[in-house]
Picture 1: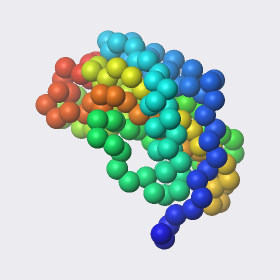
Picture 2: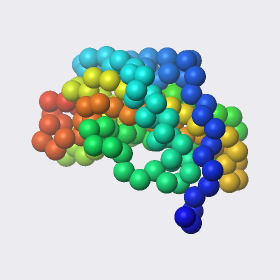
Picture 3: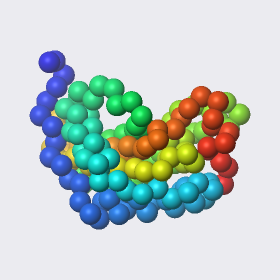
Picture 4: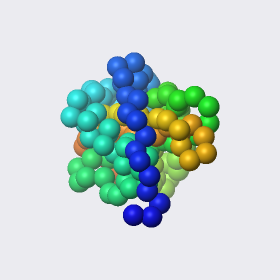
Length: 151
């Protein structure tokens, strides 16, 4: 298939997962959302998604799961804290909410997450893909007001 390449190597480890959960739950606490748990099956799914994104073959996320993707290009490996900070900094229109990394991160009705990271030499530089998956997925039309709360 044109535009595909080998997947970057898995770079998910315990420190990365702990940072992903901690950084996510810190933002959720600010916005009155309950803490998430890290689910091992969702971590496995996030690993397949991160590899697919790095190959350029992500396709659609499975039904019942939300996904946020962060790509870092440049020296060094991207961290979970980088991804969370980027999603949290996305503009969010409280009067006309739309699905985004910001809303998926804070969605009150979400209970569990998985996270993964692949990293290595990309086409031109070091590259990292970080994927967080959430269940239930959130970003449900008509439910933003009760699920994405102001700090």
